[in-house]
Image: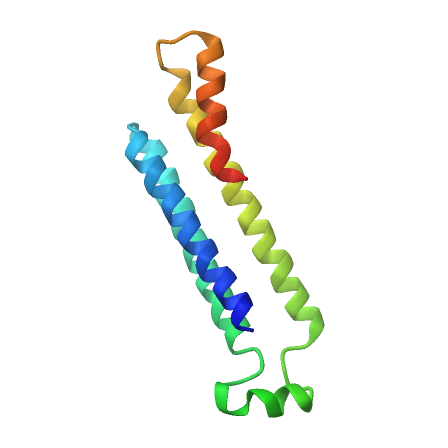
Length: 126
């Protein structure tokens, strides 16, 4: 359980750091709003997911009892939550990979440099 919670917290921190980097680079208002909206959705949904994962078998005091008596969150809903979190992560990655395209498009450099810069800025989606 602790490893899953640590993963979710690390994931939130990574998305926040990528969003802050993009906010420093993006200048158009709609791009900044898109980053803020994507970040807000990601953080809120992952915090909800964190609490569900952390308390799926109850509190710390009765965790082992609930695991042994099978009173945790059933496997079906837990698997659905994992898919849901994966979909949100994928959507965030795509949004953070596509946003630099609009920023790089207006730069006055050759096409090869634009593509290279876009690829570098989009590495955050990996």
